[in-house]
Amino acid sequence: MDNQKGLFGEFGGSYVPPALAEVLDHIAEEFEKAKNDEEFNKELNYYLKYYVGRPSPLFLAANITKTLGGGKIYLKREDLNHTGAHKINNTLGQALLAKRMGLKRVIAETGAGQHGVATATAAALFGMECIIYMGEKDAKKQPLNVYRMELLGAKVIQVDSGDRDLKAAVDVALGDLIQNYKNTFYILGSAVGPYPYPSMVKHFQRVISKEIVEQSMEIEGKTPDYLIACVGGGSNAIGAFADFIGNKDTKLIGVEPGGISIDSGLHAAPLAHGEVSIIHGFKSYVMLDEKGEIKSSHSIASGLNYPGVGPEHSYLRDAKLAEYVSITDFEALDAFRELSQHEGIIPAIESAHALAYAMKLAPTLSKDAMIVVNLSGRGDKDMDTLITSEQESFKLQASINKG
Image (cartoon, rainbow, N blue to C red):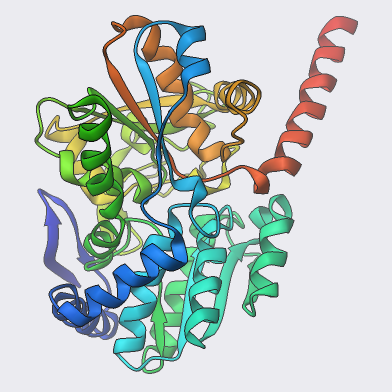
C-alpha cells in the first residue's frame, strides 16, 4: 500500500500492508494529540529533567582543539544522559504515548544495544512488558548491553535470520507488531520506518537542537558555524539538526560509516553510495546490489550498520540543506582513542565517526570558528569491540612485517 503521508519531498511515506497502515494511522493520530497536550508535555519534560538529567552540557574540548589548531570543537554531551546515549529522549516519549494509549507491551529493535537499554529502562519505569529484538551478530559484539537489558526486566530475542544485524532485527520487530498490534506499541529507535515514526522520533529528539541553540548563544554569542553528527538511521543527527534546518549561518554535516572503504563496498553509507528505493515501509536512499535487492552493510559501529537512512536525511541531502560525508572504521577508532586520551571522555564508536570528521575539519578553519559535535553516546559498550579490533590490527601488522 502506498500512503503518501509523512513525506519529505519524495522520501518517506508509508509502504505497508493495509492492516499495518491502519495501526500506524492510529499511532499518528494519538501522537498528534499528545504532542500538543499540555499535560503530556509536562510529564515528558519532568522525566527529561529529573530522570534523564537534561539539559546535557555543551563542553569545549579544549585539549583536542589546542592540539589540532583552528576551529573550536564543542561536544554536546548526550553521553551523560541516563543510560548513556541520546536514545532515552525518544524512548521516554514513545513509552508515555503507549501509556496514554493504554498499551502495556512494548517492543523494540536495537543494533548497538543503546536503544534496547533505553527502551527496557522506560518499560521498567512505567511497568510494561518489554521485548527487544537484536541481531545475533550484534548481541555477540555487545554482551554488556544484552545483560543490561535483561537486568532491567526485558526479554532479549536474538535474531538469527538474514544478516543477523539491525536490519534483521527491524524485520522481526515489524512482524511482531503486525501480529500483536492490539496490545503492543513498537518503540522504534531511529528516524526511519513508515509514517509517523520519522516525524515522531525527530519530535522527541528535537530537545537536543533546542538546547544547542540556547547553549551556543550563551557561550559564544552565536549559533555554531558547523554542526556534526553521525548518521546510521539518523535519530541523533535529525534531533541535533532540527532547529538549524534552513539556517544559513550553521552548516549541517552528517557522517556516515565508511566501513573498510566506500570503494570496497564494505560500508553502510547509502547517502554516499546508494539508490532511491523502499526499505522497511518507507522510501529513502538504500544500498542495493546489482539485482536491485537490499545489500548487506558493514560498520564497526553496530548502531550505524544499516543499509538505509532516515527519509528526512535523504531529503536534506538532495535539497542541499545538509552535507553528508563518510568516515572509515579505522578513522573512527583513531578518534575514539584521541578523545579518550586527551579529554578523558570515552565516546561510543558511533559518535567517534562524527568526531573524526570534526578533527579533519578543525585545522582548516579560523580559531573563532565554532564546531559542535553531537556526542550521541558513551563507549563503555564498545570495550570488547576495541579489544578485538586492536588484536586484529596486531595480527595484520605482524603478517605484513613477516611478509
